[in-house]
Length: 393
Ligand SMILES: Cc1ncc(C[n+]2csc(CCOP(=O)(O)OP(=O)(O)O)c2C)c(N)n1
Ligand SMILES: [Mg+2]
Image (cartoon, rainbow, N blue to C red; front, side, top):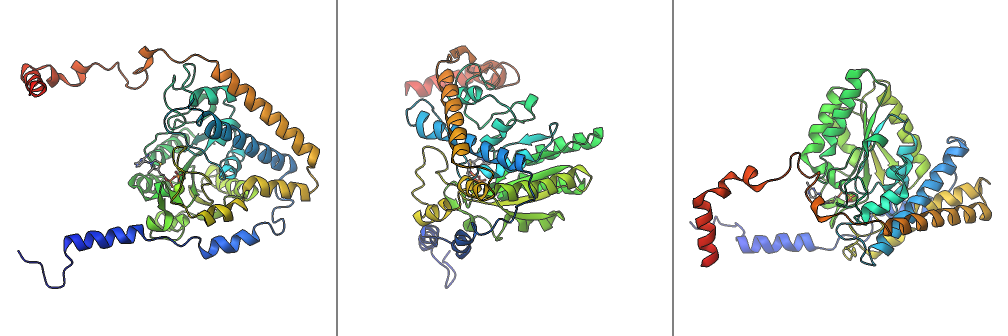
């Protein structure tokens, strides 16, 4: 069949599509440039967050950064950590601000950039390091880093690495709380890329229609692996997706930990008092590659430079100094204490034993894995003869 007049030939179409996909994105958006120069002006939250909470937010951001730096920039580079190694550098304020606003019995569904949740909820640093180092005495018995990490006793529900799969599960936890009449909420962290997956819509729709006590917190760090946000979302903001579920969509500066805390307090209170879910979008930036193996060469350098100026820890430190709540000595002592505890924990974890090989399949399947049960057809003579014939050929 001859092509219709004017139709693009497949080869030409492919070339055009490839050229479009590879076209350089603008180095930085206008908003990024504007907010880079305005974020440090004034102290919008003075008086709205109690002093002890602000100091706690600051400390946990620093502890999280130090822990992840040790993992990604030292242990991984020394070859002591294998496999995927994800960190949330530059995004610490999102997790810390939200977890600080929770109550003890609430549950958290973290993503791969939420180290702060584990630390704040009390998972020992030694356990965290041992987990990344694949040691035997860890929640997953030496398997994986943080992509399946959790501890139900701490209200940390294990992450499922399939993006957005936790969205309906977090709704399910909230449904249980509602049925039992418990004043608890569940929160789920995810990235902006994950909001383009089907599970996101099913989960939010279910949560919204049943007015469940669940809050979804999206870190919009502008990249989903190597895909920039404007190439995967037809709307400008993740929060623009909220009207589809008739729930509030809130945009907050994710690099301002106090702003995140205040937004979280409001959404959590609404959820707890029967007002249903909220979708919180935290604008931020991934100050690293997707994972430790990724040098992020595809990210315009200028973006890193602009967002480095908006670092959540530096901003919070400046603000606390301006309020007269901290000084050089306070910061020096805190840095020293954090460094020491991180170093000690890493050393202890490095000395812990690796798992026995027999552990490999434990905890992976609900029942022990036996080829002849799972694949009975592999035991047939016909199958064996085919395989043997192929091997001989
Ligand atoms: C369903 C699914 N597709 C692809 C992947 C591989 N993957 C892991 S993280 C990631 C990018 C996620 O981007 P985003 O949701 O924005 O989160 P971010 O990593 O930026 O925090 C991809 C593609 C996956 N884990 N699950
Ligand atoms: Mg992202």
